[in-house]
Amino acid sequence: MNPYAALLISVALCGVVATLMLVMSWLLGPKRPTEVKLQIFETGNPPIGSLRGHRFPVKFYLVAILFVVFDIEVVFMYPWAVAYRGLGWFGLAEMAVFVGILAVGLAYVWRVGALDWD
Amino acid sequence: MDVIIVVAKALVALVICLQVTVLLLWVERKGSALIQDRVGANRANLFGGLLPFNLGIVNTFIADPVKLFHKEDIVPAEADQFLHWLAPWLAVFPLFLTFAVIPFGDVLVLGGREINLQAVELGGGLLFVLAMVSLGVYGVIVGGWASNSRYALLGGVRGSAQMVSYEVGMGLALVSVALTYGTLDLQTINREQGALMWGFLPAWGVFYQPIAFVLFFIAGMAESKRAPFDLPEAESELVAGFQTEYSGSKMSMFMMADFIEVAIVAALVTTLFFGGWQIPYLQRDGFHFPGGFGFAVPSLAVTVLQIVSFLVKLFVFCWFQILIRWSLPRLRYDQLMSLGWKRLLPVALANVVVTAVLVLALEGWTT
View 1 (cartoon, helix red, strand yellow):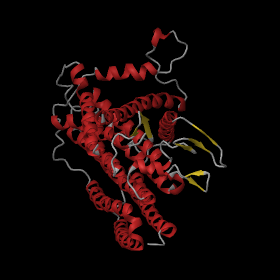
View 2 (spheres, rainbow over the protein chains, first blue to last red):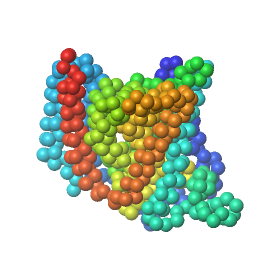
View 3 (tube, rainbow over the protein chains, first blue to last red):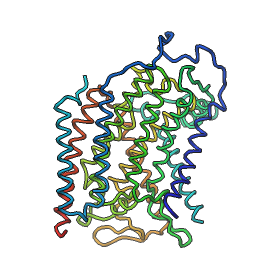
View 4 (cartoon, helix red, strand yellow):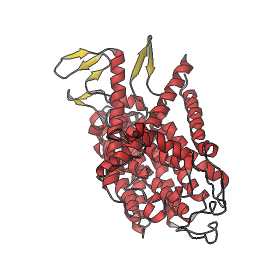
């Protein structure tokens, strides 16, 4: 049997179980909403203002960008790792160049201080 | 017939996932009590508390789930309704699916048919696992953002930055494993670990890739967002982080996602580094000890032994993670980030290079 058909069966099964769990307390639990209950939790104080449009440190965006850069390189390495024995020394040299560029990038990011968190 | 087998295997994989999770919940509660020298869950009991001991089984397996499912499901008025509903599903669903590609035994010979004990026989199983584990980040960030609460947003953003950072190290650590075995198929990797090194040492991945094992274990623990890496939900600063605004079964789903990730890390460590279902010297037809002696074991018994071996190893590594969780204090955020980017990443890169050179030097002279 095609493994992807088997995967589809697993997807359906897991999806149904996860959905059942999701709606469980909506189905079984009480429904007595009050105004205070529906407020967001703010250590017992009435919440002030809304969060939409608030700003937070740009550091997190930087981490996300770095992740995209490095993780894509990692994904490139998987097909290489599988085909490696057929590629021989040529494969090693090619990947040495690739990893070299990656390492220079990492060194630069490190030097610039993008990895420091303060 | 094929379809029945596939559905049965998918069910078994899901049941293993759910059962391990539920069992872990109990081990976690009683185990932490053991570590902290207290009694732990002991409220509910059978026979009205007439038994002289209470293992907390009724408590964690029946009383707590029933209680959680009967809680009121609260969605804050200011929250994004659809995303608030979607987040717990997103957190749990890909993790359920991960167990489908993890082999839990070799083959089951039933009526002349050889059934491969892996729910979905994907050639790129390792990539699939990585993909599914990284989808877990959506549950955290969507849950944190949709709640529209300050604590939840902080927890969600922290959590996504943390998971994303450690994913790089995790992926790189596994590249060297893929290099060693030359395949991404988890069942093939598992079978190759049945060989012997120098005639007596089982050829488990940990002997080939000890550094990758340590790197992967650390990164995996960080991915599961539990102490010492539990900054996304750090209860002393952020209440409960991204799950602050969740109640009832949705909250239990987030909690479950954490436990499933513990189980996944343990299952992957077992499969990739500790021989998975392999038992040293046990072949399909029986034991073959070094030195030439051995005895035959019926095929069905071999299968059962292998499944038991897989589950035992799984629990050993789950317990190891729980031990670490209750022994180490939480990291500071800058320490967390520098561990991920400045320690794990360069070491993992170096490990890949060294592995590549060694593979060629030891096997590849001819090409």
